[in-house]
Image 1 (cartoon, rainbow, N blue to C red):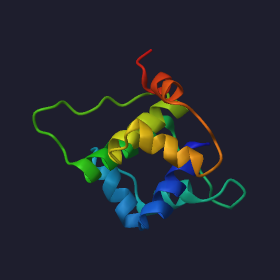
Image 2 (image 1 turned 90 degrees about the vertical axis):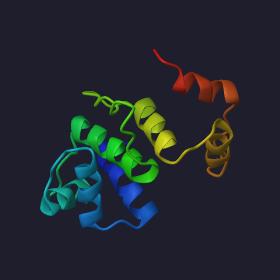
Image 3 (image 1 turned 135 degrees about the vertical axis):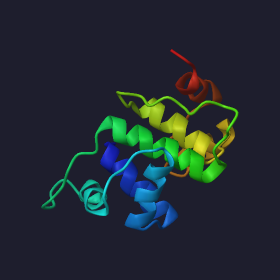
Length: 127
């Protein structure tokens, strides 16, 4: 799954407008125009498509965490990863949506992808 796929999936799942997507990035102190966001949301075969850089994806996911859970003045802001991996994306989505291990297992079961608790734990283990 590409960064653009993740952006599109989150957008449709939460029914977000382009302006709201830009607003989520602003929460993490990153700026893009609505036109730029639209180019990230296009499919690869559409005219005007632009690949979403890893750094921008990191800002978006941090902004999503701030939007869904609030910004803590006491805790430092999460770091922005320069290289996004599927594990990092899943970790940040887990935080944003306050998912427990059992929730993730249930979600994966809905698409006939059986995993155990130990496998999910391995994804979230620090390297």
